[in-house]
Length: 273
Length: 272
Ligand SMILES: Nc1ncnc2c1ncn2[C@@H]1O[C@H](COP(=O)(O)OP(=O)(O)OP(=O)(O)O)[C@@H](O)[C@H]1O
Ligand SMILES: Nc1ncnc2c1ncn2[C@@H]1O[C@H](COP(=O)(O)OP(=O)(O)OP(=O)(O)O)[C@@H](O)[C@H]1O
Ligand SMILES: [Mg+2]
Ligand SMILES: [Mg+2]
Image (cartoon, rainbow over all chains, first blue to last red; front, side, top):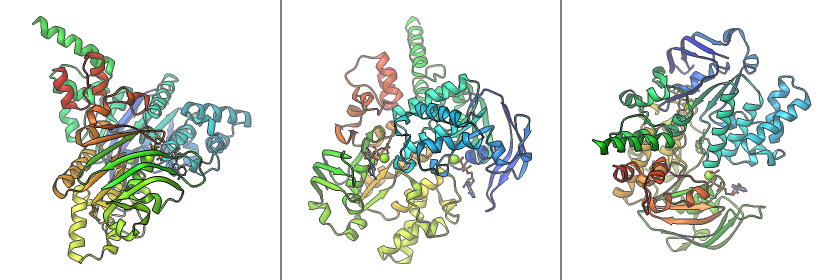
């Protein structure tokens, strides 16, 4: 499902103008990363997608719906949402009830709820703990639990606010596989992250925000190569891109495989000269 | 300055120890990084090094645990609080909510130190500047972004000017610039004021660039200890679930060296 933002501004009641004239179209099935410095407006922007916040000005369309005409509960059927702070979305007594809450609320049968809970907990590696209390999990695992709850909603659009915070290699690996799977299933995925290495490896497109505005937008390779623009937005390219630049090697390698190939070619060319 | 000898710790009612015979000696003026997979014991070690274990967390301990040569458990809490500061893993746990503005929130922690007004103001201004949130001073500490809130949590501890600063994943929500600001500020405090910094992190590149020494935990045990490059470049980091920097991973595929690079500068030199 696609998503459109037209002329949107948002001002918090305290007076802070957090979004300032945003126009954006995210086609169905895209995996988009939103980047930008602390306070740039990333979380505020995505909260408009499922009605947690409503624009002060402008329109947000979720597929063929004008979001202004739908309740937050209705929008939750189309847009799944992983909060930056998982504790904002956990309130049940057990992991299984937590993950089952959404599907049950959407009217899924008990058998269907059970199936979805099992699948989602398995995906994040928490299936052995279905009966534990969410608050007996440490914070990084609560984030994975919240991710499971988001996945179990089976929405065509998913918004993930900082999914990799506090995760070790195993957790990052699980999130990476989940993103790849959901992407293959044709879901529209919007991920906010400061983890440039992770974004570079997974995102098809990138959008960099600065002071409530869109600063740059484009394919991952294109955006990662725009050193000056990134600098202005205080976004650092991922490690491999910085290494390529430091070596004065051409290209924007986004994965270790890419880097190794491009490096070998570059050395060969250098030698033959 | 802080010493653990075969130190073990069990949270109340648990059978598995969260720290298992850890021996670690930390000298004044060191900048130490702690790495480990989720659940490895990083936060628990942070609690032990800051005295939160055993002073705030009950449970069982075994082995030696000293601060400046004195048994940690026997130390007076008030005294310890003046010397050691802990930044919690979750910034939401740090913010007291007892005050309306960020400036007041930071002042809240200072009120017990009995400082004169102008000294208090100077410390707050310095702390705000160190993490670059001067413009948030009059805002509510709750009406801010996640990363801004984390900066407030760090500032409130920096303002206390403890001799030992323990930080548990303090940059998890910070943008790359903010992360650099925090590491640079800490590093400066270590060199100019000789304070001791202990920091748990997943951001290996930054640890490698700034720390004097890195310790790696796995299952509550100390698994490795040494220079950042020696520890973070080793294959053991993969087995421990810590991972390695992409510099190390790329170099591992291209070079045969005794020690893989872990920072940008090391990788540039090795591959140029
Ligand atoms: N509840 C709130 N009330 C008032 N202002 C807010 C609130 N939440 C955020 N802001 C402000 O709105 C702006 C954008 O915040 P937002 O949370 O969208 O940033 P972000 O890009 O997600 O940052 P981060 O990377 O730190 O999470 C910031 O200036 C912030 O201080
Ligand atoms: N309050 C507590 N009560 C009981 N067990 C706990 C408590 N806090 C942590 N543990 C357990 O102690 C062990 C070490 O946890 P700790 O939080 O120190 O790990 P960590 O390395 O900080 O992990 P993370 O990367 O998730 O922050 C884990 O097995 C954890 O489940
Ligand atoms: Mg945010
Ligand atoms: Mg921890």
